[in-house]
Image (tube, rainbow, N blue to C red; front, side, top):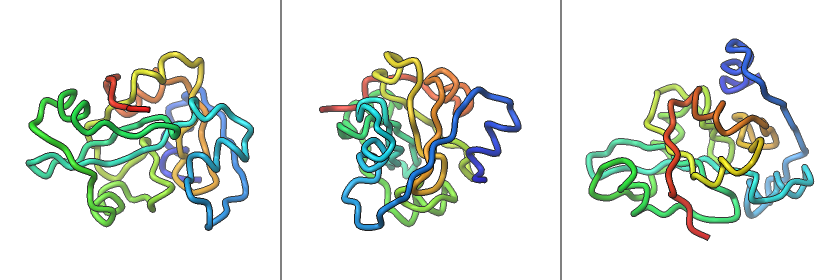
Length: 156
């Protein structure tokens, strides 16, 4: 179990766990998850961390087929600008390794933003806290347990 799955289990939140054999040579962990689990890539979301000009870390959950629009994230967060967070800072803050960062069960509660496209699916898939482990849940459930806001933060 991971902190993400512990949180969902303790809260009795509706979710399903999916695992697959992770290939350490995979170029994209999210696209690997979609491929190995036979999912639409648009329904699989990656968790990214960005840093604001004040060094506040923000969590961004975007589809694996797109990328994070840092300007849109800054606007949603009400800050001047954002840049991708230092990988070591992301790992320290969340307690997860890169490629397995879950938006759920992080060590520190960070402001979280989920791309609004997640709301068009009955369920989405995000990392469950380890490479090769995904959790399927409703976007509204993810937002509830991360206190996230939905915003247009992805670009194709």
